[in-house]
Amino acid sequence: MSEEADKLPLTEHLDELRKRLIRCLIAIFAGFVVAYIFKEKLFEVLTAPLIRAMRQGDTLIFTGIPEAFFTYLKVSLLTGIFISAPVIIYQFWMFVAPGLYKHERKTMIPIIFVSSLFFMGGALFGYFVVFPIGFKFLLGFASETIQPLPSMREYLSFSSKLLMAFGIVFELPIVITFLARLGLVTVPFLKKNRKYAILIFFVGAALLTPPDVVTQTLLALPMMILYEISILGAYTFGRQKPDKDPETGEGPSA
Image 1 (tube, rainbow, N blue to C red):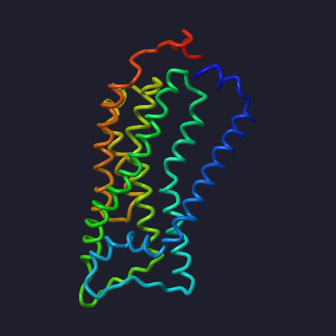
Image 2: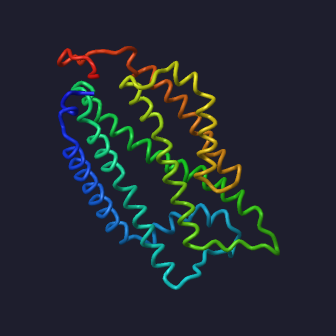
């Protein structure tokens, strides 16, 4: 941790956090406004995997008078969050940056770019891979006497939760590599605790997904692969031993 961060009082840290959060909210609001213009098309794209898995003639419904309106609002908000994801990630890493050495801050731009890429990649993985498989499995329980009638509100809640979960989960290699770079975790530590990580992945998948083994597995398996990528990243970029800032010659502060 750099001395610059140590010298900042708590009030300045809180003020910096407030400024970063305001910028994130502004970016989300701007994305929301743009997305609302295309709300019907966006909802059509979001529901496409479900529609393809449904039988011919089946449709989504809404059971409350204002449900469609609020669903379109939430779709626009969700899209706004995804559009502004690079800004949100940038603000997060810039809030962390003052606590780093000068040479460590030089890695922030690549980290921000890769973090945004991984987040969007996780959401796309959920949309193009998990959704088709999961919906086909879940709707497979329909029969002549049991008809699926998914509502707009239920589908949006389900899909947005999964998309956000996959986007966040795909940040795992970036976070672990960053922690390894700071010397907070090591490759031997990651390897030693692999079995506990796998257990946490399946528990987390059970909490984040519907109570079916297919969707849970489709989330847990990528997390296991990402963990192995994290170990590789920690091995490649991690700090092997406590070092000094090459710019100042100072060691880590106590």
